[in-house]
Image 1 (tube, rainbow, N blue to C red):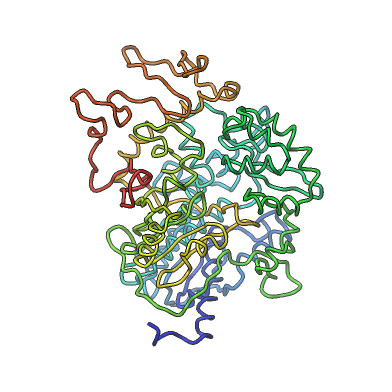
Image 2: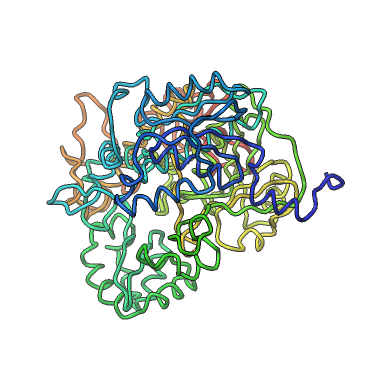
Length: 616
């Protein structure tokens, strides 16, 4: 409360070190373990480290570079040979099964009975439990490597330790939630690098069955998005993303080619991908006529995601990162190399509230979250909170839906294709949907009431958007803005989930069957895509156009006409005015919610009410 608020100095100390009350013991030498411990240390926890496992000069690029990386990972930790008697709140161990078992035994013997967090390459209960791995192997097993490289060549392996870094972050999130209530904390938490690294390919894995499409279409070619590529500018490189119709029209304005925006061959991102060589013939030479700063300034004015592409060595001196203090000398030594600081920025107004007590749904059971975000970073942050038991309310509207639902104009269908997008379901599971039109005064009033009733408000909109909407960052809720790229547009993906909700799998499987059919229909309806997608089989007639290739139907199966951008309509499931066999509207045949959960929710069709579970 206001009367118990700490001084300004105390608030500043807690903003810089909010975990100063925790004591953590770290055992192991692999990157995932050390990165997880680094996050605790940089947020103020007292981290004691017992070295072991991989040698420092084997990290990163090896040699002096590896030793510098190790120094960055261990910055702020206290090295010891023996942990003593404790007490500790958390013991982090890994990444072999033996090292995790040793850490768990040690945790059981320490004072305070700390939680043991085990980080392994693979699930210790799965078929790969005894496998050894490294980061390139994880990239290969998750399918990430296969997506990169020339179509006629071998896959390209990514460099660095990104799978382990994401696993360390995933373990940090799980452990931090578990330690919210020390009276209910678990004795052990298990996280593995393989599943954590699936965040890089999970959306492609979900959409993959919907299209017989090679994921490797060439350098900077990723279905179903185009342009979303890096281009050479007059003095460097820029990343240009123009996926939605307004973004594509604005990019054409930058190039002084409004005729391209009006060309039906480039009307959708899928059609632009199919005709990418023609677009590149215009965009590549034009990109070289503008400097990187000119590209970024024009993109900002017209709201096109355009960002500079600096080299790693240039990053610390980029004004954005420099002014935010995003890089610092390791250990505060001016002679030491510079490395990234924390990706978090925190501000506290001094108000306090009880910690989550947790419950059957997870350690965050009882926490309510208003999720105003869309795309990658914000929805994934909200998904973590939902997976850990929080009640996450996904706010969107038919006027401005999350772009994972699709940004092309799609004819009405029942169920609407926007409700069946597997990408949206993947990123937004374990959430409820709320339709609030933030362009209307009544919607703003409802949003204010929602924010006042929530513990956390999550948004990743453009700078100042919430203030302009009349939804300032004030009040009792905590506001979280996920990390952003050099400008406001590119989101940072941060990790995977802790597992499927068992109660939702049957419903999700049914929904994905519809999504697969809908995606096949959309891909088959793109005239220029026949060279990229091979649905195979007999013809399906497109209204007003020639025959398209489609999957052969089984004998005796009813034929349904596939319209462009629209999924085939199952028997008895027509538009809203169509009648079913018993004379009732087709909508009356929808399955009722099971266990209080509806996967096929309709947050875009309601009038401001809760609509069940968005995508899971």
